[in-house]
Image (tube, helix red, strand yellow):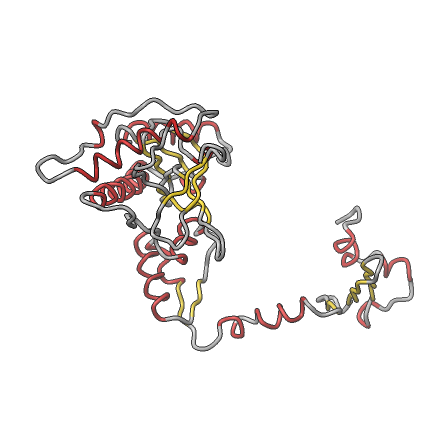
Amino acid sequence: MPGLNAAFIDVGFEKDAFLHYTDLSPYAKSLLKFTNMAMAATDANPIDFSKFDVEPEIVKTGKISEVLGEASCIGADFKRTYRCKRPRLSCELSLPGRFVVITPFNNIVAVSKKIHSSEERKRLQKIIEAVKPKNFGVIVRTAAEGKNTAELYEDLGNLVNIWNTVQQNLRGAVAPTKIFSEQNKTNSILRDLLSADYNRIVTNDKNIYNETKNYIQKIAPEKAEIVNQAQGNVFDILGITKQVKGSFGKTVTLNSGAYLIIEHTEALHVIDVNSGYKNVGNNQEQNALKPTWRRLLKLPGN
């Protein structure tokens, strides 16, 4: 659709997916070329990705018709899905791991800016540049800080193996077809968020418990024991249900014995601060300036 500078792609859904030019990767021509080569590959004529000739990058202000034809087959990722609208696609392919993310068709190495030490960023970049295969860009995640070469190499190797699986699945594929699917949501969350601060993971689902424990044993075996299976409603067991219900009430009780009453009027929100029976003293000024109120109101001296 030249007027939209976009294409509608058959992905096997009841509605064709939407792919705008701005969602094409700079390496879209390389992706097109690779997709067709991988689909036509055989055991006698496999693709060696390290020898793949990357095509020139597309321009940012180009036209969709300059990249895609009406009969093109291209690998794409679901950027967003909607219940009643068309899915939106992206050709910015990436495979995330625990410490690194790989991006095919380039050789750029980038290190998370959340790693504040310049020496550590340089160390990580030097390690990745020494071990990464050709035609893969690598983004080093914040979680990689302090990790040694063996840990980074293992994570990178796992992602390269996944890319090889993608390449294998493309062989003989007939569009539209699913080539690769992300791991389940629980493992995705743990991959991105698991840190040394985690001391307990609770689930009441046996399958999720087994999957989670197996995954943590793989990525962080020292933390496998923090996974626990509960009987009954986890939110009730951990007191979360009570906290949620309390958050919708008007009264907020503080540990000091004080309490707040919060009400919404037509013009504003009103917060009534009550000292409670524990904070009754002879001096009204001192009572008002107790640490509880300084913390609550963020006054000097907190």
